[in-house]
Image 1: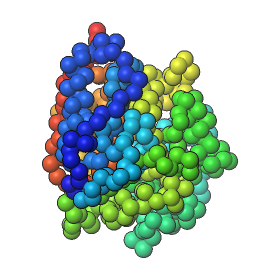
Image 2 (image 1 turned 45 degrees about the vertical axis):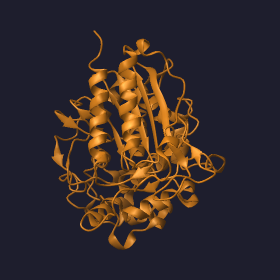
Image 3 (image 1 turned 120 degrees about the vertical axis):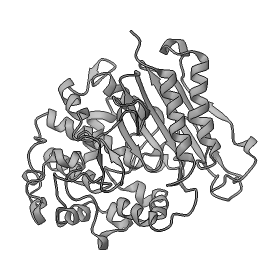
Image 4 (image 1 turned 180 degrees about the vertical axis):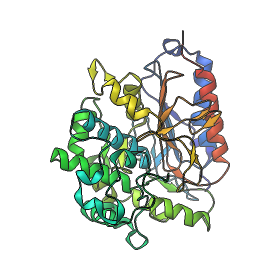
Length: 411
């Protein structure tokens, strides 16, 4: 993909509600270097029509900026006359970064005594016991060791993701694949099962539980599954970007996503997708809202004096559930907790020397995370979807700049 139009017309950067860098223990030059890397350099790859980034350090917002266009700029097309500039408060679909939220809601329900994470899923959802899954625990589902990483080949398609009851029925009928013994990323299936457990135990939609435990206490405008009609004119549009996805990469992507790569992007811009509740894949939020969520976790589960999670709950949620291990779905070494993707040393998902970091990646360079060693919580939103290319080098290099300037915690 090449971004059409004069690049000089595309470099407007908007900012919102930032404190002076010194209030967060950073210099002005450090903040501008981070901004240049996380926004300017990412946008300059010409992969992302919009880039939005929010950084909190020691709880203070030092960067909350956007660059590019939320709508009206796409692959090989001229800038549309009605194009809309991306703003810091533009809502974006988090895709798989949504998994962190359904995971923490599951941990919250356990904290309240509604479930036991170490009990089998079938204790709460009897039909799940079919096809060798009777011993699979909730904890194993959270840690991507549930043994049902994907829908059956004949059950794939957009309608699978938008019909909740059909999803649950199909997952329950899916044979186990070495559940509890093999690490394999569950792109969509795990979130539906966790959401169904919450629905059955609370006797209410999972969105109600999300509203009560996270969205309302954190004062979020968006931060829920799907998007209401009045907000859809503001949402950022997603685009296929980069080189065409061909075999064998295309086959790997479809196995991991349960849909062809291009279909995932197309579906994400459709009303029926925004109407649906997909716990693993369609939470909408601004970058600041996602950073706020991780700051609450970084602050021990407390937000503005209100305790949302007990310390023991968060300790379990970020505790490693596995050593770095080859993920049989993603085909790369990964380290998970019960619900989160963990950083690694010397290099990991959150950049160099990020072994204490935790968070979650979303479809093609959407990232929300907290790094206790650096006192930061951050969210990166991007709208171009490309699997391979030089933009990945820029992505890791930009994280390196961020980590370098933030250093370690102050004494």
